[in-house]
Length: 505
Image (cartoon, rainbow, N blue to C red; front, side):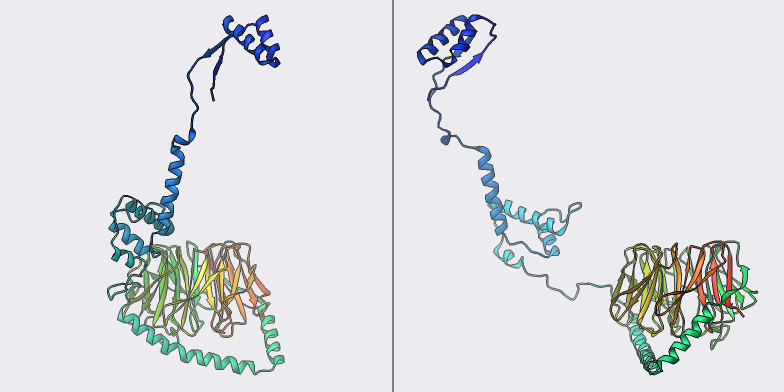
């Protein structure tokens, strides 16, 4: 088919052009005459080219060939066997001389990169050894030199056996006590609970004392309920008499903010005054051990390189747990003053650590908005307490053995059931973060909480209804504690004071 190329030049408004337009619908002979007249006038230029019919089937489509080639390459790549284990993928990339990991590359993307590399090699004619091809889908054989966990010390193995032997009889005794309690008449238990609630509603402030020049971060009663220990941001720890709040001793050993001070479970009861009776921690990572006679530490636990915010004694008194801002918590054997366990598992700093009444479990919580329950006898994390929206700062086990409470920066307290492995109740406890909480020590019939909203509260269990609000501090309430004889309550505050609360006569 002959094609003509027509170029239009400047066309003046003249009669020939008007005639040309007018004759657009004329007959073929008339069109030819009009076109010849237009060419003679110079208004139409037609290049005479000897054109032949063009066969498009003989001209190769480069783009189409590229697409077909890419599709064929993709089909061949899918047929290549590529290992699914990321370790094997990295090993194969190393064999090929390629980087085993690119910035921001995920395992699935790395596997696709290996597949494409093998496809390119196959296209270039490089053959992969058949023996290697058969070994690709196989898993790596685990040898004796393969390390999957941190190798524990023999001291840790011995400690786990000792903890198992210690906790099992205590668990049996606790269950026997609960069975005995369940046999009591319901009317008797209701009357006892009503009397307890009546007593709690009558709590009133009995003593207020300026404890330091800096905010008081922690307080705890001694096992005989006759002493109160406080820790301050000045680095000083102090012992006070109860109930007259007279200063007994100043403990000097920390150079930074003291985070907590706790009593040995048998201090002031069966231990001698010269024995290890207390432990304290500070923001510089120091952990000091104290007796009841000296104002300087008798020993220190060295090994922390970040802030130690809280620590707690194991019910046996042999071990102590520390919460560290290096995203781990540690277990120390106080008989040898050595670290037997350095447990990781949190993604952010660990703020608090507490032990189960039986001594079999330990709970940890921190800035990753979750808590964890660990089995000390096996080292496994048996339960993840994931339900808070912000930092979890407080945690405590109930004496009944299956309830645990966590307090958070989201102003709530979550109560968890270890048997059901879930949160059973959320208490909208305060108007600010919950700084500390504690169950009633013997029966767990109520829960006390402190908060940065300048108050502390008492909650009934079960039901979780508020029984009493302890208001009186002018600053944040940093900590709250209950004396073992349940006669006194202590609150420590940012306003540099601590207060004692007791039943109003």
